[in-house]
Image (cartoon, rainbow, N blue to C red):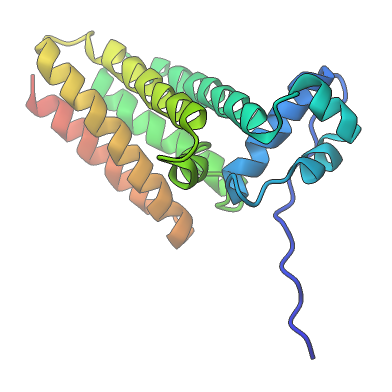
Length: 204
């Protein structure tokens, strides 16, 4: 018997009320989040977004790379919104880190541990090859670090340390999300949150 052909992960259909271009971008972002850049094709995007193939090329005449770059920018903003809301739930920056990891764990659990960082797979696949996508990914990480740094400025921590801590927070969250996906457990994120809080408090 031949082995069954692996199926692409299901991606929730985008709301019909969205404009065609936004629906294409959101669908591309979801697909790349789960299966990366190389495995995401224009035909699959058009089918999942419920739009004609010609519509994809109408909005993105330069093709897949142009669309993928825009999808990374969308993922950047979407993840930033999640982080911003989570950070705002706690006045104390250290406690806010715990809140962020709890929210990320909830998102992962609700997606059956499929939806981790929205740009990691694409960033790794295209690094050094597709500069527009690499640049958009770098800007996303910078954006997220800026959100953390802004929260940390509510303390008396020195600015140089704030910038270093912002890097550490985002790097730790990236690793903890991956570990949570692999183990299908919130524990890596919970541990990361507790230790990030302790780290921030140690600088006060």
